[in-house]
Image (tube, rainbow, N blue to C red; front, side, top):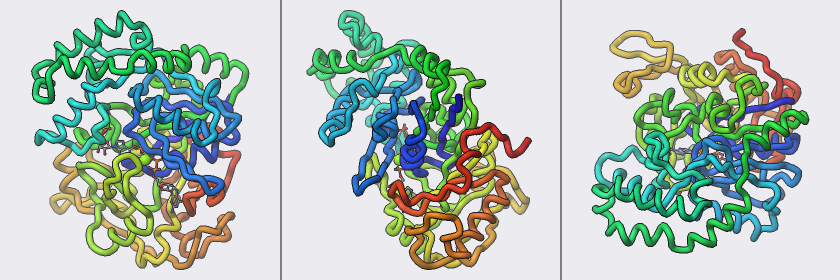
Length: 434
Ligand code: GDP
Ligand code: IMO
Ligand code: MG
């Protein structure tokens, strides 16, 4: 019973959606385990492009069943809208999507609080989707779960109580009564809609596992945005790392058979916070335009930098990565030379690991190694040997530095623009460091 976790190895937007959809063809279930509609996962196939925020990328693979797990935060309005969008494009969703009764619900006041903080000078560059405030309520044990949302009487009581708890902050937005009305505007229709997808997903996944189902666990965000292990406080409010898959899907760690980390051939970050290899000037501009580096959810331009080996080694460690996927190799075509950060300097001293302290994360200076780069159009390559020599050398050099096999190389947005170097190795537990 293989269960493969696919995580972002950087600061998000690594191409997880593309890879989960690609691997989803061989899977029975795809499970989203954390985050919410702050995610934007792009999937391109048969000339069609989909931007998914909340629904697992497996929904675009006809034979696959999908779960929004316990650890996800769900905005009911976004949930309805995304399903309508999919159905409008001919994708069958009913009977193939299950929403955990234990997932927490994002309500309009969470979005107001997120926006208020972002615009009130205390911002970290969030997506303003209410993610942080919703997880705050969860941890404070006052949150509203899907099961509560479906119980009209319990829901009304919880909302009234929570609006009182948040009254001082919310008063800056609009009268509490108006916010309460907004929460309940159209509620009955949404409640019925959500009810038709709600399930005890822990039980469903356990039954599937017993039958030998093949499972993909789809992370949102990235390792460096992890609440515990990322560049705190410039992080999201959940645990995107592989450990989060057990918590957020409700399955034990012994069920996980392998973990694939998705990294771009360079690095991007959207939102504020440390980014040691960040570039400005013409190379950043070139990569941003060629790689279309604008946020899928917010449209914000992504910050661009070189690949960062200590950062990726941290991701390998915290996720127990058994393999890597490298995306967007095609975007680096024509960039000469390509640089890779292989360590840092801080106060004249050598630093070989990604630092924990905020100050050190901001102050480290990258030490680079240069590669000559490559030219030409990579997007037609289907085998590793189809790639220009400079591109192969770049992948192999990074692989050697990281000590984890790069089993998939992606050379374009579309599904077929994917090179698999070893399919069998992907789903098996094989800790390359042990
Ligand atoms: P996710 O959040 O990790 O799913 O990534 P996003 O969808 O937010 O951002 C990745 C972007 O890169 C999307 O527009 C993808 O279609 C695109 N993409 C993924 N892989 C490749 C690739 O190998 N080459 C190119 N040029 N684009 C890619
Ligand atoms: P996918 O799944 C990139 C960033 C935000 C901000 C921080 C906190 O598409 O990779 P939040 O709204 O979560 O409270 O914002 O996290 N962020 C992402 N960056 N990709 C994402 O998702 C992101 N989701 C959140 O920009 O810096
Ligand atoms: Mg994204």
